[in-house]
Amino acid sequence: APSSTDNCGSVISLICNPPSGSAFGIGTHTVTCEATDNSGNSTRGGFRVTVLPGNQPPVPVIELSPLAEFPGWTNLIVIAPDGVAATVTFDGRASYDPDDATFNFAWYEGTNLFSTNAVAAQQLDVGTHDIVLKLDDTFPLGTSRTNAELEVISGRDAVAILINLVLDSGLTRKEQQPLLATLNSAAASFARGQVKTAGNQLRAFQNKISAQVSPKNSNVAAMLIQSTQVI
Image (cartoon, rainbow, N blue to C red; front, top):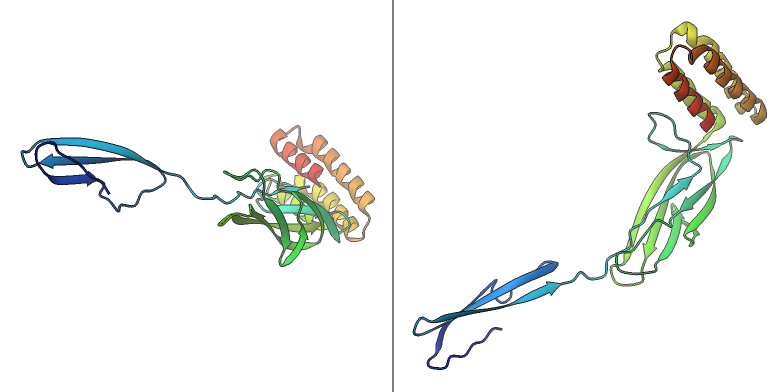
């Protein structure tokens, strides 16, 4: 509500830019007003309006372990060596709040709340799981959530991924055959629950890669060995 005075007459014009009643976004804004008297003399004045945001919600960040990362695969994968279940650690400590020091954690699988800690461990069966992290800083509009969809797979399924990598590696069929034979044996051992035997067969696969593939194609060999070590 701007006002003005004049020492020898009346003010006939008082205009502000932006006008009174304007909406201001977040940030600092300058308002300029110009008063003009009946003699045509004018003077400007101004002030600043600073608009601060209200409470901002926390920003949730989920980190998972142990993740199995394969070349070309973007899915979040965890391997259950026994083919039944795996213990997965969910870490929300990288979450932050732009304007509050503390906030509350809540971890869900579906509607099941399984932890209110920043870091939680949960045993998950083989299959696909949707994990939700909800944060609350206890102030109005201070809640947020994010989710991570992960797949728990068996050792046999992990070897199947490795088999596909061999098939797509560009190696000749003759070069692939002994490698695939060893991987098929490892997959069968995982299916029977013989984890140690499967591990030995995967080590044998790595030895074949080093002896047969590395001299000809070191990049493919490195990729396959790295993928094997993930399992």
